[in-house]
Image 1: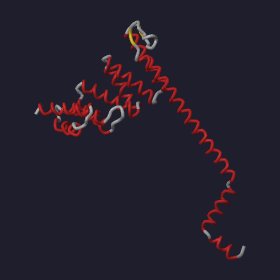
Image 2: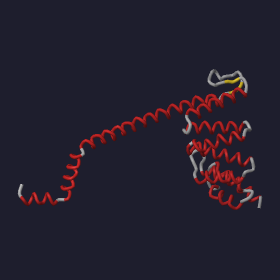
Image 3: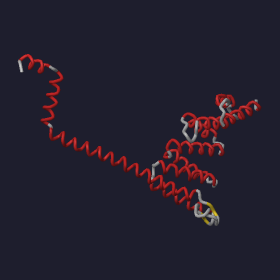
Image 4: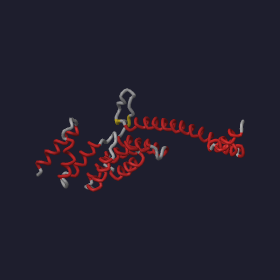
Length: 235
């Protein structure tokens, strides 16, 4: 190789950087091999964790599905040909529901499935007239139930607050649902519920909420028309 070529190569920045990198690697070969092995182990572990978490999710869903058989149980002698769990009394059924879902929540604390179980326990408690217990479980569902079941829990909590005359709390919850709708609680539904709530005290705002919905050829649109008519009568 002639002198000019050698000079050009030596002055080429890219070649110099590559040379430095090769030299650095040669000096630290042992460290690179060790750290590379660690990184590879972490990647493999991460892949294993992914499949482990996926299998755990499937197991939790299966457990929740089995628990739903207790939730959908009935009282009496007819078990629908073995397709339904039956309990001799409502008290026995309620005890079984609480035991089943409380166990699921304890075993899977913090998971979305635990949030779903909390939501169902909250709705069940409200049906039984146990509002304090319903509030507790529904609040847990808001925290753990993910966007979908969390939104259902918020809607249920808003209904409880409204029934207790706690309009400010109900309004806050419904406004949160309007601003962050979900598949289970859409923006139109949340808007309708908010308009119903505030109509007696804030009729003009309620009317503004309902006006954009009245042209929709949906249940929400028809409800909006009815509510707007009621607001007009109340002038």
